[in-house]
Length: 205
Image (cartoon, rainbow, N blue to C red; front, side, top):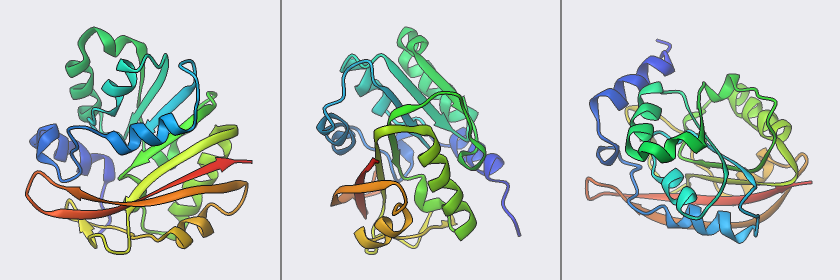
């Protein structure tokens, strides 16, 4: 049975608060540190895809970044983030879109994804994602992507996921990207369990 992904995620974010999902982080320090490690300026164009109602956007605003876009398939998740940010929400571009259908005239210096990519399980969708990133990243822009490692769970939020190694990620983004670094991290969920993530940083050539 094919799942309507928008309906599925709208239901998740309608039922659960931001700190009641397994991927919740009170402090997204790894993502922030990887973004800062690129040495981009405050005017850089940053997009966080599959953001849900993550508080990464809060941290980026606090660091004085001026051009932030937040994308999620769930309008409910974006609504929750806007309410949390109050007046600060006005400086953010909010985008409700299925990543597989996303297109824009904007071009980005940083493409950040933590915990979206591993939900794409078909070869077609994975190739489409890589193609979209390549199109929308500026030359010398950075792709920062955190996904379940080969030691991570096989399912999340009731859905099958794909798991990755450094080498398997390099194979997917082998056309037009240079691999900069990888690191693994144990994520402690709100439910007292652990998930192993792998973060990879690529630079567009």
